[in-house]
Length: 458
Ligand SMILES: Nc1ncnc2c1ncn2[C@@H]1O[C@H](COP(=O)(O)OP(=O)(O)OP(=O)(O)O)[C@@H](O)[C@H]1O
Ligand SMILES: [Mg+2]
Image (cartoon, rainbow, N blue to C red):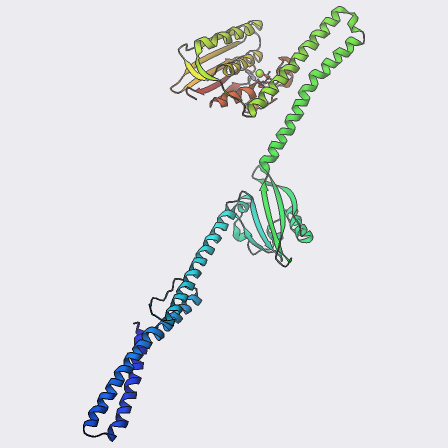
């Protein structure tokens, strides 16, 4: 029994005692002799019966009701942990159980609500897009973490402010105004400068409309589309480059064919000269188309390496013969240092393509009487191919770019060598497919060294 309950019970007992004392005082003057004992006995028994009744009533009805009302008050205050622990029988039992069930449901509902709330918060904050919620009067109510990253501000600087006071870009303000005006989804984009970088942001405004079709505000979603723009630009550049590269040999083939038809055909010597040019230009065209196809195959991840154990001393023979032939033509001194014991896992044909491309470049971009050297050596877990020349060299600014498609340090010179500008792009793809890497060390007018590092085990 709680202290409040015992006090209540004590007061009921006190009332009962007073009532029976009064009855005693009223009845006793009328009794005499043995009647006094009888009256006293009757009053005492009556008192005990009443006491038992009160105790029963108190335990089974009054106490549970008091406890239940206490729990109800706690629930009103929001304390859903409160429970009534009395275990009575009868009607009061239903009441106590009902209030306990109610408290339990309320508790579960609050836990679920809290969980849902935190789930939403997590989702909103971890979204890849920036998010802002504006009410119908234009005040900002919610911003997520990505938006803060995009604009580099703190949320306190947004929440509670009018959108046009915190978002200075005219395009964003226009999107909000049009979303409110037309009550439909509005798209736009703008450029944001972050340090030296330009970031392209797409913004989508959507109206928030309630069940009674009233406009309640707008949601703004910000997507960073810089990467998309970059890819789009690359695609455009690629198409422009391909068209340009194809145009040159086609124009020249057409020109010489027309000249031949216009009468030059009669002159055997001239015809031979023109046809030779047509042949070499069509070979260039064929090489270009072949390289483009090769590159597109490599980039589509279709590159399936035919892996096997490559014994360097066998594999290198053909490559050296070709390099020597090429070098002799330009009177270039070709030397090589190869650790004949080396063997590695990889695609023999593809790796041959890598080395030949590098050796061709070294010979092509080195003046007559220059030197080209090849070194193949191994470290603990790598195989290194080093192709060194004493040629033109590559300026610092171009070192990273020479692996891009169609990039040439000097277009005119490269075209004279018949180059398409795709060789190193292909080389890089093949090396990376072998989990290796390619680097270049070069000094303008002194020479270059290309280093391919391949893991011994793929
Ligand atoms: N060893 C080198 N020395 C100097 N410049 C080089 C060397 N290797 C490559 N380059 C530069 O890098 C550019 C890109 O080389 P890449 O091999 O990709 O194309 P390319 O040789 O012009 O044509 P191809 O596709 O026929 O090989 C070359 O145009 C050249 O300017
Ligand atoms: Mg090349």
